[in-house]
Each structure stands twice: as C-alpha cells, then as structure tokens.
Image (cartoon, rainbow, N blue to C red; front, side, top):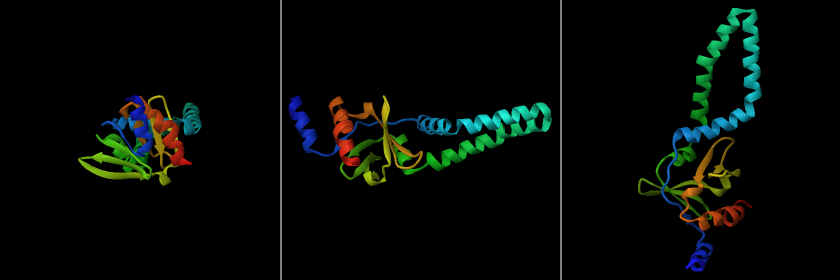
Length: 168
C-alpha cells in the first residue's frame, strides 16, 4: 500500500493539503520579525539618541514620546497595509485547502478554486521547522504549514523533489 501511494504521488504532479488556517497576528509576526532583524540597529540608534538628547533638553523627551505613541503605530499600520493585505497574505489567513501543481498554487476557498500565485512569481522559499514561507516579494509570502500535508511522505516529496524541480 505504501509503495502504491508513493508511485501515485510521483505520477500526479499536484498535491492537495488538508484544510488549514493561521491567524493574522501569526502571519504579521513573521513580517515584523524579518523587518526588526533588518532594521534593529536604526531603531536602536534613534531611540538611544533621543534618550540621550532628552537628558539635555526636555523637548527631545517629548519627541521620543511622540515617536513611540504616534509615529511607531503609524509605521506598523503602513507595514501591515503594504505587506499583509496582499492576495498571498489573504489566502494565507483564511480557511482553505491548497493545491500545489506544476503551474503554481491554487486555493479552494469558499467552495471555489482560485489561483493564488504562479511559480514564476516566487523569489525564494524559506523552510522553518513548522512551515514553508513562499516569498513573492521582499516581505510578502504565502504561508504553508508542514502539518497541512495529508501525510509525511507528501511533505517530504514536496520539500525534496517537487519544490526544487519547480524553482530550478
């Protein structure tokens, strides 16, 4: 039975996952973490400069508070608006089944099959211990958890054979 299942996977070039969903905060958390890793030194330098300047001049302390309570939430909103409201992000956070095939990724959402992205749009794929992040832009990605695959064999096939063949 197991050998028959493996041959069926290699003959059919499409893989359908189980229904899954992630939260918007989990999706945005990955984006925020990537941005903080890239920009942490600039943020820290700005914060230290304003704290040091507020020791000399009280108005710099007011600027620091304005930055924390007015500008930083606006920047977070703009990041969310620019990256977390794209089609890949929308289809990452709704209940759906994903169909991976040789042309790209389709989602079964609301009982309709919708094309989410083609493999030509994919820039890179990051593998984590819990998921695949399929990036189409600098910070925009499609979230595909490892536990969404019906079996471990399908996940291994996707990771080791299907994905390298498609992206090469």
